[in-house]
Amino acid sequence: MTSSGQTRRRAVVRGAKGAAPSAWRPASVRGLACVLIAVVLAGCTDPRARPTPPSVQITLANGGVVASPGILRGTLHATDEYGLDSILVSIHSADERLITDSLYFASDAFDETRYLEWVVPAGMPDGIGFQVVARVVSYIRFSSADTVYGIIRHAASNAR
Image (cartoon, rainbow, N blue to C red; front, side):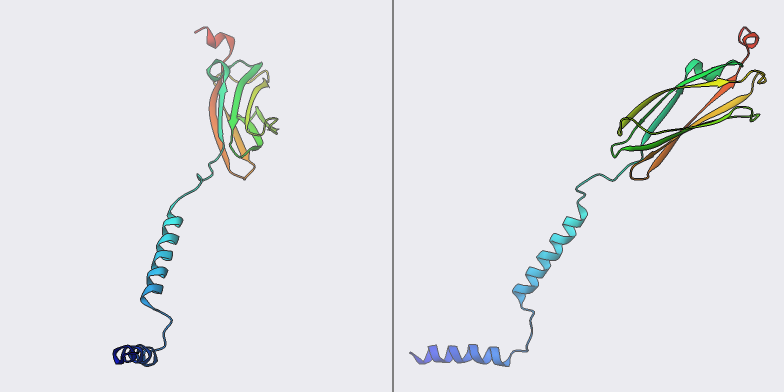
């Protein structure tokens, strides 16, 4: 071996001996930086959409105008991509003579349409308002509600 080869080997050995003991080398720092960047970028992407509450819509027949005595009719439509757990429909009149609650469990777990009917008692004053509230709960415990309003009108009042 030539003397230049021996000198070089000694210099490399001396460099390793004389260097501070450190696990961080430029190559490992670059590798760590790449891993951190990959983790940050992976955390910023959203692989799935966030859960949303169920959708509910209630519609009353005749624009919410009903006679006393009479039958209040309506339609309820509810959907949820995670599944419907329960549907609670309540009716409250301003004079508290018409108060009712109905609890339904969905027959189709994801999309439910119900035709609703309630008997309106005789003797309710003309012009009394009422509200119908439909509250839907999904299997993941999210809930939403829809509220509609109606009014009691007697046959004589409707003729005006």
